[in-house]
Length: 465
Ligand code: GLC
Image 1: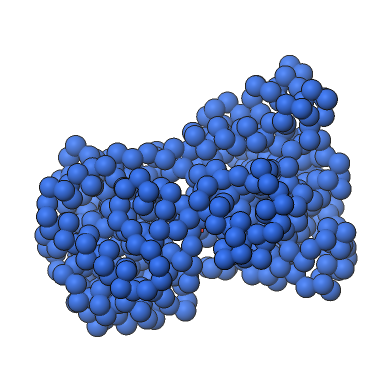
Image 2: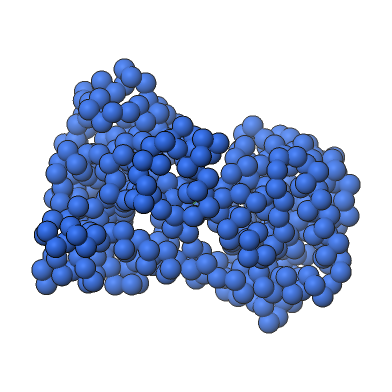
């Protein structure tokens, strides 16, 4: 089959570049996306190779290639190692064992920037050699890839997905010289990607629209507006094989829409392991997420005394240095508040399954996978009406929502939720609708496929971008 024919309809070859992939390395939602989207593409018949930095602590893998990479004065000999096939996707690590330590619970810091530039150059070089149809780059860590693909004149398309515009990989002018980046313009790796990628996406239409305004554009709204129709929203999905209360190995009992007996068992277990009174009747409200400002934890802490005065129980789950102490203090003080300084999967799963309501008060949220997972587990999300959460939960009426920044609105929505919970029937219907809602990866994968293929005009001319 010729390349052009394959480019139009047939199976695609995609290189997927990411700084994390669940369960090998996970900081946040990107880890879940990197696991699930390539898997979904592979199921649709495409060949996907995933590229991850060779973090300290990862297995060495089977060496398949070596390359000398350079960026200005930074130089390294990188190994490309095959890490096996996962759900039909081949994983590769790229780098040296010393290159990047994996010890940053809140993600990477700017001083790792040189390592990510070298990683990005290696990813671009591999694409120039292996010639996939497209390279799919995720977030600032690999924002340099689309720019460097142009330098290499690589015959493949590049797609950049922004999972969070607030993290950009900023670097000072001096570093631009050292790393040989001056010709790419900006002191910002994400901006390089936005400028040079053939297509730029973010993880919901609503967040896309928000980022076009100065309020949520994080200084890049002008650049994003310049990309016009090349910047689009592709909503994330949920991997329903993984997040299935009917088969979840982390739960003490399983359940689904037709039979919720197992959910009651999970609730009792969550109450017990949280040191809360075991009581099936009291509404249990959970929060699961990184304890960072973006997730709205400041609002939660501001409101915690009033929350504790409500006739409900609260379980907070997550890590984040700055805020852990405050949550721990609230948990010690109030008998109906519990805190797990934990980000491990089994704890999170029990919180989804054992709760009646799921709090997601994020200040902004590109997609917001946690409330989507909560829907499936029958924990009715209570979200701030922003970004992906406005689109997926609030607008279709799949949960409760509030707007604005003050705690009166949060408390009002929560109070309303508690009333409805106690009302019985209406709540059962709301929960059932939540559990039946589906946001699949298949739909997202179909959208990305269109972006991986060259537009018709380019195909006719016989070149690919
Ligand atoms: C980031 C965003 C989150 C999104 C995730 C996956 O973590 O903050 O909203 O769901 O990426 O795209």
